[in-house]
Length: 220
Image 1 (cartoon, one colour):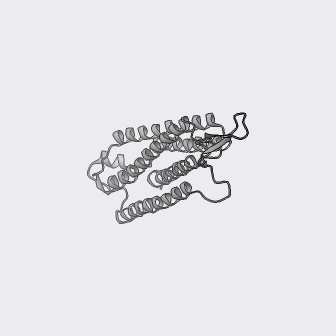
Image 2: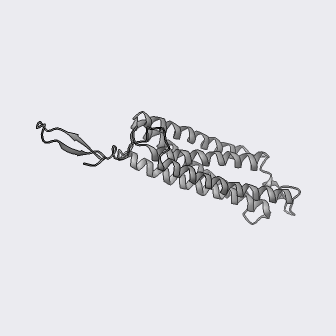
Image 3: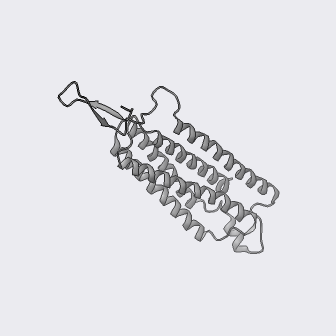
């Protein structure tokens, strides 16, 4: 009998029957250690921290070498569009959406820890919807912002930073979709939720990165 089976009796004490239990096959590590899925996600996030640190370093390097910043061009309308500090409210709204999605994501983790599968699915469903809403909002912002990726180093760095972050949000939305599918299949419980917690760590990470991006591009 494997760890994925439990014993039940059929009235004959001499002939127990093995009943498959997919949840019991992968119990959450309750001994205080870090499970392999969580450790793998933490190492992956560390690599992503180095990746985004490189992007931020490149941005500040270009910014320090370009005086004034944003660069002044012969196109007065383009110069006006470059002034992101003048109208940060739309980006601030997107920031609030991501912060709220991080809250609902954590609520989902807390729900599955206490075996509240319904609360977990609802919270992660709302998180996914908010993530998609953020992506749609970013696409709309790109269509109306008034400058392109080839418009001076400012446009290049802006689209590089926000574009890579958007790709990571899309990846997080895919992860959330997989977790929701597995949750609806009943694969998570208070003894098996490492994948849920791992995805939540990644989602919190992309939220923190966006807060840093918003502060850098729209405030500093």
